[in-house]
Image (cartoon, rainbow, N blue to C red; front, top):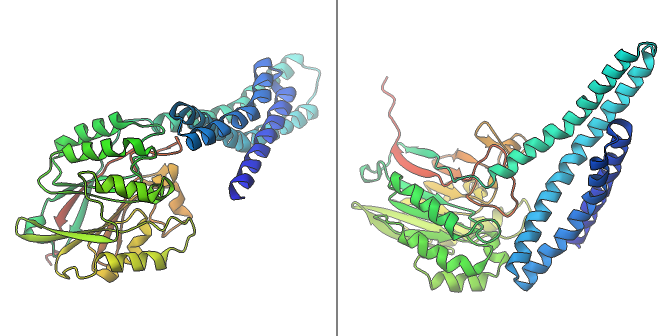
Length: 395
């Protein structure tokens, strides 16, 4: 029912865009290209969305990929025009009203004014669409490796400079294949991380999951690699995912922990299950999951928690977790000054970057893939997390 409602609203919005574009064109441009584009606009979404659904249902990869790409692009165009065209239409009406207020005796001035009005009105959707084009291009850019330092006052000497390559939200299958992961791992070699963690949403096409795990395993590190699940592992069939991951070389931690030795210092890593639900209140689920994950774990070990959902930070200090690594948010698709734009409206959403609560640090990755191809100022990333001792204040 939810899907049908959303689809109906999107189709309605597409036809509303068509009406706005037609009216604005009649008022200002009188362009045949714009007229034809207005007629085609709503039908592109109606054509591509069923292809996406049918391709996914029947596991026809070429159909799914074409449908997903076409649906995403047409959806982005429709939403952009939905915001920009009313402004452009409003500017056109104001310009028309002002032109009637002026004297009509000077034809040259009136022609010049009309040309300016056409250009001004056209610039509004063009500027918006250029931003969209930049966002689409950014969503297929090379993976970045932000250097993130996590400082602790009582960090064991053995963990000073310990580096973790954090992979999250690869979403292999729709827009990225194994070659994207392979190139990212090749580019990461120069940072010489000590271990690799994967915090969920690895593959939207489960046929590439074994290959992805093999590539990660082949990446040389002195300490083990580990993975946790995200909501997309559940969407694709959690039983099949668990079967494939348990048969692979990268250990899956599902409400479990593992302890290993780092230069004579105990290091405990745990991974929690995903609540799957998109409801805001997932506190109870995460509380039970973290409790189960670190049951019987030593209180003195350095503890790293893999949680696809960054909201785990609200509970992690209760269980003595030192570092939480998360993903899921894709930085809200739009970044502003190294943070998610949506942080303005969601203060405790932990949408992108470093956060701290009591003695626990969190990094939420913007991810190195997506299921919706749009990113503005939040590039694909695989952060390198470096543990460091917090400098002591000498007074």
